[in-house]
Image (cartoon, rainbow, N blue to C red; front, top):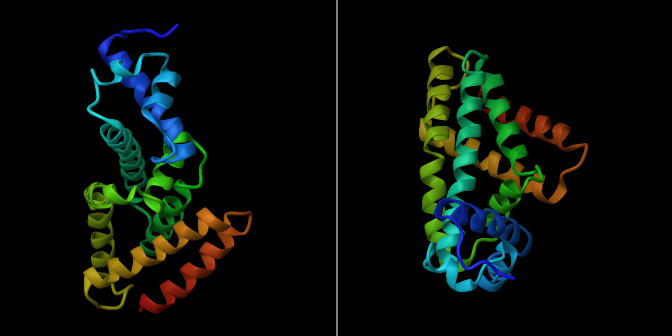
Length: 201
């Protein structure tokens, strides 16, 4: 028997929890409102008391996943703040690319949403990701500026250095998704050595 009503906050949270699991397993197109309502144990009409449509549920779940990622990055930045320049950059590279390989629902959902986003939501999702990544980009700018100032990194345009670094990070992220195995750490280290050799003094 389905429930017609749950407590407001509890109902929203339960809807998002069930939706997270379904979206991470089946994707946006493979998940229906009926699937969500059945998973929660409520009538589909009850969902509309809290969410306008499936899209609004997806975006709410996406924002929650990004929030977790943002907290993770903030903790990482704090942990490495006193490390040497090269070590800071390498740790960020490995940690962020490895973050998405973990099998928790939020990470699976975020990974799938980044790699295979619903076409009509692509621009919206990319805007939200860019906003979330601002803290990481700001940190990278500071690290590269510090490295140049200390004579560790070759002088160059900070934006270009950060963009080059992010390209390596994106490549490792994709590699981790498709080819993650016991050799991933070695591949990451070898890729990093080549990149670092190209920017160090």
